Length: 413
Image (cartoon, rainbow, N blue to C red; front, side):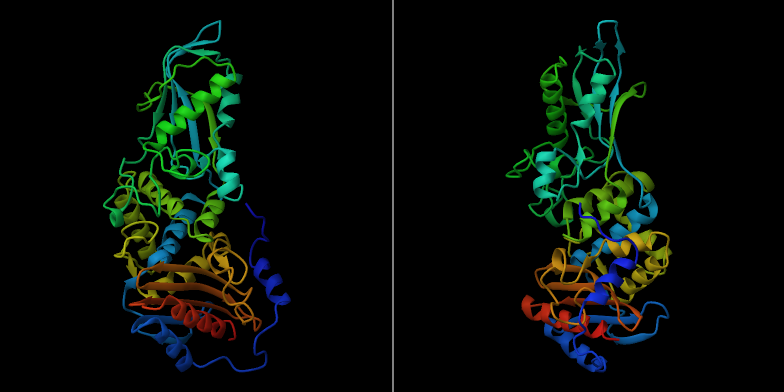
């Protein structure tokens, strides 16, 4: 995980080092921004406001709801940061239902209990595919040995009951989607069957338990083969625990590369913790309720935005952005968005414009849909919030060009 300056200092330092395109010139007019919006087709909406005062700089059809694509992740990660807390960590536990005798034999079974951590995996996987951010399953091995367990008479069970067993979202008929991977309450290596990331596991929870069992056997702990699925008994006691990166880091890992697997796991976790259960629908209801409480709103169907019926208006997106900026989790939320011209999905966009190095943004792309929303921290000292939602897009390159021109204009105020 990359280390970044915290707070608005990160934006400020980078902004001071960047040249301003057209410095000294007036910002392009709202009429120009509306024209650029049209590059994305006829079904676009736009809102640009001063994030401090709410003063509108430009508006076009800002109250009409449109498909969000990955701008849905703004709603999911803001809810996770606010409800779970930026510094919270998600626990994966090993529990035992048996007694340990004087010879180190556990007369019972071990239960690998999933807590909804999207980052659980092996270093070989997350070092290669997740920039080093991950929760090391193998850390449980040493704790189990330290507990004095040298042999297990029962089995190693995988407990994935925190979530339902629907592997996908509405977009894929709730089956496994190649754009997400299989979802599970005991997620492992982002749903892949091995650290090479070549194919998805048929059951991520069993894959996690089997990996732990192999590691224990390699460490000299005698455990039976063939892990199975079973809920942890109420009488079980904790033997070991490993905790995820912070929710702030998970939000960053969701938004910057636009990670669908992380977003969908987080939304199910929100449903499990604060809703009616560990399902996508329950989590989406929590997200929608959170947005309403901020004076925003969203028709939430999943956490990632892959389902086209996730909808909100530019006005609702901007309301979320303004409310989050003023919240306790605001700094973490803003820092979780990709810095223009520097990282993630906007690493190669807006180079040489007033927006380069000055805006924190979230992109969104589906067939016929393109979106860009976020904040710009301007040399003038103004902080702007904006949302560009384009539906009916036929030429993605033209849509991006129009969005980039608008963002550069926003950064010039």
